[in-house]
Length: 89
Image (cartoon, rainbow, N blue to C red; front, top):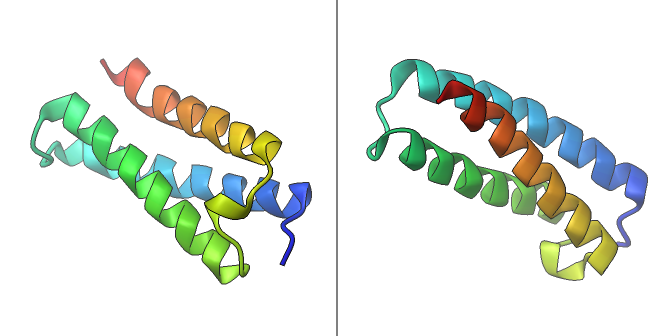
């Protein structure tokens, strides 16, 4: 299945909400080893895992995305992680 830009935008919007909630819980509890850097790594890994799961549900994969879509994912991931981690320091 070919993923459209609209479909990718919907996935990224869902991921943003999901990671924002996860970051809030993680930062409130600070139970992840490694402090803020550990939480940042955890959130990045969760983003990747959740993205791949959402893409698989659409019969796709990160490897099937066009380079412009991959760039969009990378930029969105950095934006989400930075928003949740950088202003907490």
